[in-house]
Length: 101
Image (cartoon, rainbow, N blue to C red; front, side, top):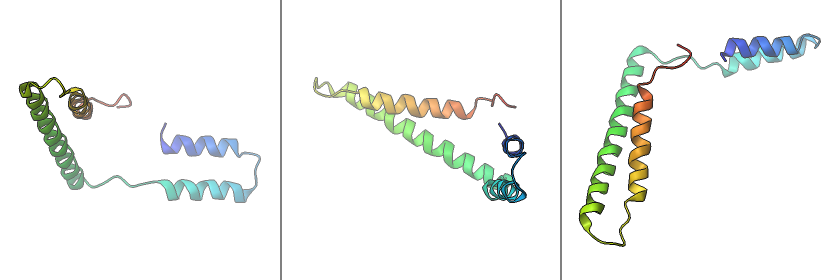
């Protein structure tokens, strides 16, 4: 649901209210709208996010390999596998198209 739809729904729900209530709804909608970042900032944010997730993936993969090669029975790679799979899922989720577009 977009911000415009939410404002329309709120205004429809406040149809019988006073002008002050409707003005407060409009002011709240204007205060809560966040402008989208510029295209150059989006590229920078995207690169930072991908780089950070890639670093987490490499560190987690190295940790998995280390715990397997370690050979100790007491060492469990379960936590590191969880970190790796979560980071991989997050990175793959960035490339999935939004259902709204």
